[in-house]
Image (cartoon, rainbow, N blue to C red; front, side, top):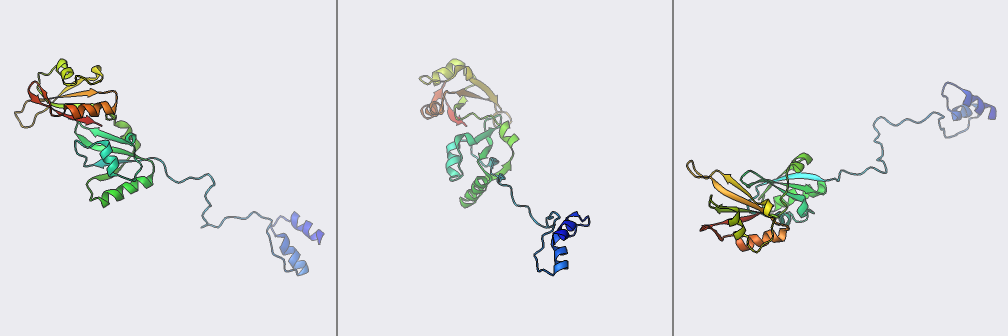
Length: 225
């Protein structure tokens, strides 16, 4: 029998060892081919031990955000979606009106959960898928900047200092803008942005100075997110 096995091993036709043994001795042996097994055409390969699911950051664009909505309002609205202050970016136009809000979710599951939350709460907002390039394009103000509106066009830097007297802020960050007024013949309106050293300082200035006066004009202040 050993001679038969050796002959089978030397065979170039690919005949299995056990087949020769069965034909010669009539033994009911279970056959194992000497040729390598091939995968079935429709078989699905088992996942690698190191494969992971698609659980990376997922980006979304939240539409329908009102002008005075804060990041904390959005985070509280999307409860259970694992968002932090750093995961929310407000996208403003030149008049500092939020046209959309960019959100960075820790996973696709968190993004899908946000859609369910919006539907459950009456679709106050609309959430669309976004990509990383849209997220990177938006520079956040981080809640450290305030926007002052309603000031006269003659307002100077010294007037701004008087408005914010007693508060710590970056004087070099004061910027003044003009935007078109409402109506065909309306005069341009002046806006001022000022950056503070922290979110708390910016919020304190908003609470204390919103609705106060600058050169007899009542001013409006909001925190830019």
